[in-house]
Image (tube, rainbow, N blue to C red; front, side, top):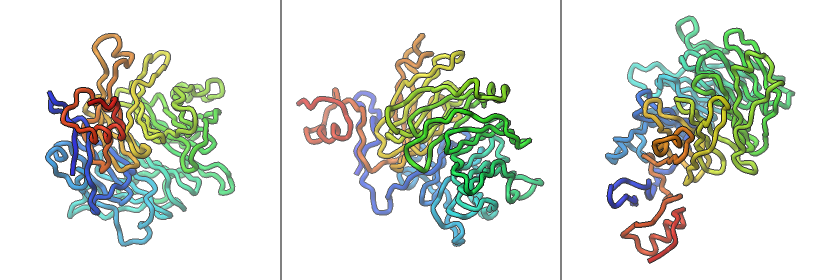
Length: 417
């Protein structure tokens, strides 16, 4: 059974409604996602190791498989070395390959859409324990990984023009007795810089060519919250700025280009963008828009916040919208590379939802982010009725029981006859 609310005049869908899930349609959490290069579809990989393609037209036509996602392939294998918990995954820039990490096993490189002539998955051996985070370089040649063995490795996926190299280049190797762990890594879009975040809340920048430390932040960003993650790092599209989300709910913006040129961050610490909430509401996902003037952030309070840059000279930002209605924390966010002002979220509740940003009315307020609206465009059926922030004014055809149900699920209106 499905329930959808539509605008009476335009017949436009207002909500992704209710679907009663079947035993074969149980939601699993999305681990990673990425838009196709043309912006027309989305690839995801979930905890069940299944890669799906989400297409708006297929979903609108009522097809596409589970919740609207078309099965592409899976990472199942009979090799017990790989068949454990999926720690992390990343799609290559051309969307043809996926890198995945499992308990104790090597990194696996597999085809997103394998065919009869597709080569078997490649294994990158070198890390001694589970890899917790990975990212590709923008050119797709390099893969950066961080592991529980306290090492950061850089892999040349086209070493000698043939098969990927084994062992990788070790950038960071902490002592086993060191109480500090490596938290996360990021690759600059220009390919000229790497960022490594530590559980101390500090961030170090490296030159990928010389493998030398360029600069290290002296400021210890606020930690706290869950034990399994404290920092989220994302470079701006220009590579000049690094956004850092913390477990305390703060987002810091660091002018990495200036700090790298000076070679010292002690004089100028990364500036606080905003304290999102009071208390430990950990930032779980960050993404810059392609133009670099918007940031979408997801957190443990089951919301997505949209930030707009007010002034490039002063680097001031403000929160212009809060998206609610999720039933779990946000695991990943990506902006459409082609369609302006569109982004997608992957949530712990198993949902994949695409959102459109309306920048507001024409005039001076647009540059300030005033009047911004974020609207649900399309996505997976949740199996849970969500009506967060929905206004029931002027709605017809609802009896009192249905109204109470919608209010219970987040709709805002007084129950009137």
